[in-house]
Image (cartoon, rainbow, N blue to C red; front, side, top):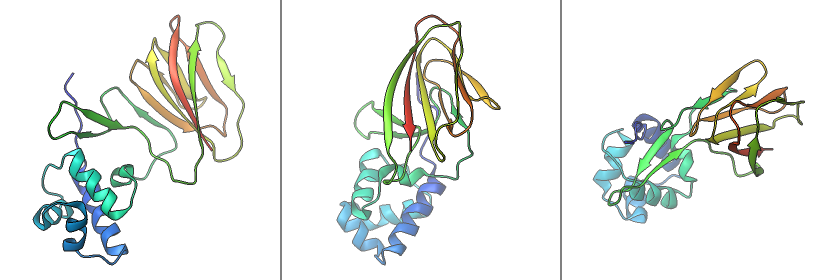
Length: 185
């Protein structure tokens, strides 16, 4: 399957410019630290070009920012991404594509779980503590997951995030449905 999304240049450009200016650094200084040409950084800050993961990673190291921060946009309370969606970054010299599904601040704690579920009785969870977010990446089978008010049907490779501080559900629709779950506190 060919990836269908690409680096959102406007968001990335705004983040690069904002971080560089916040730190009071010049284009020349950041470019030198990242090992790239000044013209490349200037183009990227103007939302032009087609940067590879290596260039973007070097810029993040030079700016001392998390890689995922290049692509952060305001989020709704429930997010559903289908397989192949998300923010894609690609290697320059290999068939390697990474899709950013979610990022978190450095102060958040994340607990990682695997889920195996069977059809039959739905798993309806009571609200957890305030500000908890659950993330589900469906691996096999199919399931309904999310808040009771906004559930989504997921297929393999689909992703959903939703507030865990309201009633929510995970309902397997096929035998041996599996998923990865991350609970963010």
